[in-house]
Image 1 (cartoon, protein in one colour):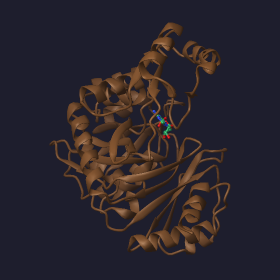
Image 2 (image 1 turned 180 degrees about the vertical axis):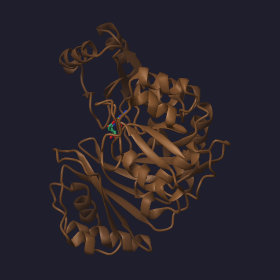
Image 3 (image 1 turned 180 degrees about the horizontal axis):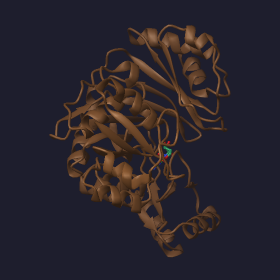
Length: 376
Ligand code: AMP
């Protein structure tokens, strides 16, 4: 099988690594340069998108911010999965919110803002404090504002108006501030025959809006809630592939914050911790194969490597640690790789994470240090 992935970043790279044992070959479309590239070496494979579409058995995506004209050519080929509707919903908070409402899935109260008058109406409808998010192009906490008091309305509006004016079809979604206890996510797959398999929930810690630590958790009640919402959304979209849902956990009750119609950073732990990793399961789903088991095989956590291109050697010497580099050039805050940390049981995983706090720099890995501090 030959799969063309829209996007040529680390997710396409890890799909390529996971697909090789199944004889699934990946080429990637770099949306920036418009080149077809090898997902591991980034070598240009040439011949352009049309030929790549023709040669591919299946086309899928590794991210949601794909130009609509590209999505449309792929859609026309009849080879694109999950669905362009899912990709568009992942890239536009208005469509995402409408999808959640259609699927009767709980999410934060919201109001769409296109003008200064809408902003007043949003304040009346949603109340303060509120979180304001650009509908297009915002992720990892980018393009967001917090409004706590009415004193800041004008200053916030000035910034939001600039944001709306800068991009075609841009708007702002105002959301009630959710006083969550923690953030969790569910990664799962829906096969071409409608079969659904989900991984254990992951608890996620963010640093400056970017995922820094993700740990698989065992919570039967929350898992049930999350799976019900996953099923409602996946079925509504007639989805095929891996889908991720990010939730706020408010006293044991889940609200969906975001959907990601693709393999997800909070599912990277599955490479070492689950019987079949998310990358393989995405490929199995889009290639029409049976899904692999999503069972947890070892308690596992994932530490994101942000803005660093080296690690102390002691990490590789530490039992249970697996390093995954993405081959990217170093840039401040950039996702450069991740470390999966596995153990035979939870207490051992906690001990290993504490010993990693002695090896990893506090500034670069604050979440690991906070975790170790909390256990003291
Ligand atoms: P997002 O880009 O929507 O994932 O938002 C980035 C981060 O902002 C989330 O991971 C949360 O920590 C926080 N956040 C987003 N929306 C809300 C909300 N409605 N209430 C409270 N915190 C939020």
